[in-house]
Amino acid sequence: MIRYLPKEFQSAVQRIYRWKHGEFTACKIEAEMILEANRLHIMKQDLQITETVFLSSASNSFAVPGGADVIPGDASGYLWYQKEDGKVFVKQKKLQKVLLRK
Image (cartoon, rainbow, N blue to C red; front, side, top):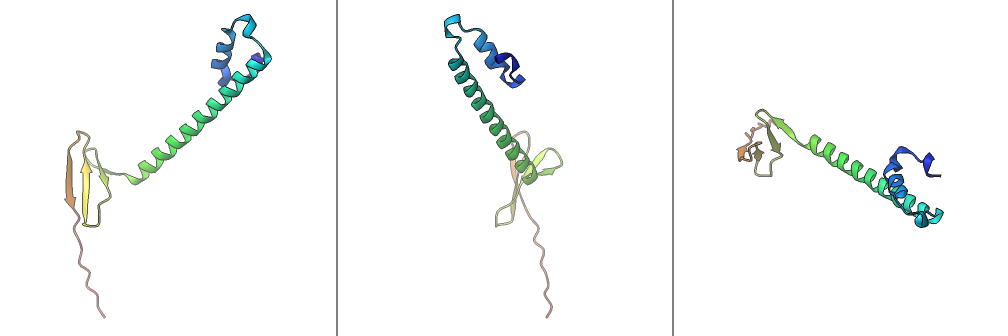
């Protein structure tokens, strides 16, 4: 029964093989497989969430020469930079005046 399980279940199979002869029952094996399937499902969800966060963080970050990351500025027009060495500095955006003609 446990010989034909997919590779993902190999750690559970190894745990089952360590059981004593009296513990080796179909009901207990089934319970162990359900626990392992749930563990694999949660692990897969965690990886998807981590991947989503990584991809969304990468798209919101703007690379600056010198290894600094830019965080979009606040309403005051400031940009906050943090370099790899941990130093933080602020740069004010240049505001362009637009002449409106009627």
